[in-house]
Length: 425
Image 1 (cartoon, rainbow, N blue to C red):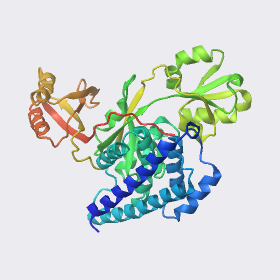
Image 2: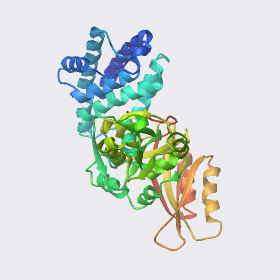
Image 3: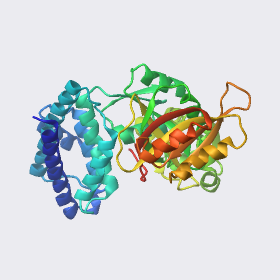
Image 4: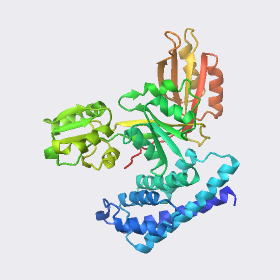
């Protein structure tokens, strides 16, 4: 069966899945909003699945449904939903086989975002867009795991914000490979030990991540997607708030939550550790000594801690942008961003002339950062983001003109622009 026909069938299955969720949304009550998946429901899910989807994948999909307040309490409805997931899995397997035979890339981020937008529109506003995205993040994660043994390298350890950003993009069903530093993430993808890598590139309050910028100079890897992650730190522990004597966390988190700590935990001792994951581990091991931790929800989940307070950071709009790096960049979608590096010639006015080439082609520049080249004294590279795809005619003309003023130009990748921030459990 042709690839387009299989995709039409998947679209029809998605329509039926969304319809079931819309029906549930119309009847949902507030008491379902924060339920967890109990053992009895989990057993039913596994029984209905018949093995075509991994048990853990079904669990994570349904956990997002429950988290959205859409628990399928009617058994017939639940069975039908799982049957549709099984049918979708069959179609996805066929798609994977066709892609491999034709040498096509398994993961297509531009199609993923297009699908999410279409599904959100399909819900007619009955279901919140963030809920649709969370549920389908896990459905598509299961699909990726079926199509290929997808491995994602990220800046570790487990439970950090980079790990959470990776999960918010690829879901729980793929394999994650924590790396000790930025260079190891790039190297892991370059040697094809991982399919993709996830690295931070900038924070809304603290600016660019220089280590990531520097690695792009020599790396052959391309940017193929971006992730916006709202950084929401919280207080986690396995003891009551009144019993807390010591707070453990990364120094950056303490800095981001300074005012809240002074107002709410003024008598607690603050102990800095290397990561929020380590802080959560200590909070678990030293609970009887009054230990608690500050960090994100994934670290709390990993160590069985309760989030006593959420969103306690002083800046409620604190957001980090992450990049997904791989072997190839993405085709045009009509709403794209391109990242590039260039080094200007050592001539008067070269930088002004270089930047003017974008203005002349009516190209918006959304970001510019300078970094020392580390090859010659006082020589700099400039990292630039523009609001267009590298294959656009005006970008091609701009880059041709840019060569007159630069000693080096390198396109890092074109990828779909996004406006929403991701969240994950």
